[in-house]
Length: 181
Figure (cartoon, rainbow, N blue to C red):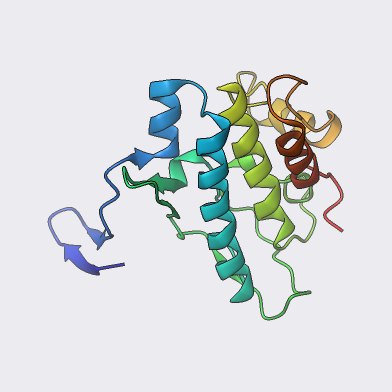
């Protein structure tokens, strides 16, 4: 965060952030299709460090997705867009609101159940699958309700053997556990 200013003519508050010259992970996926595993490992490490920082400060991001992971050509990855982040007053506290991007919501969020830090871990798992396969792992073309049913009822979308190393497949499987406990 570098600063903020009011754009009176547009009725907006503009926020000035550090410039990330690589654009977003969503931009990179659109350009390259799939992210090579060594590059993905570096990105995932930075995202995990960012989530650990947030979670240690009792904050749930609630909108982790490729568009909210910014990249630099120097190899940095940083989380962005904390507009729907929530503060929870303890490690066992939970959120109760339905905010964020439905496509990356965890099953407990879609179900309207209380949620906390594991919801961000679920979203990271979906981001990793998307980076490995080059596409979002669920069929979102039939609308939000069908997508929410799939999130609740379908098996977790771990990439097939050969699409990722066993270690990455294991990490993704651990991120995409349907039971947040």
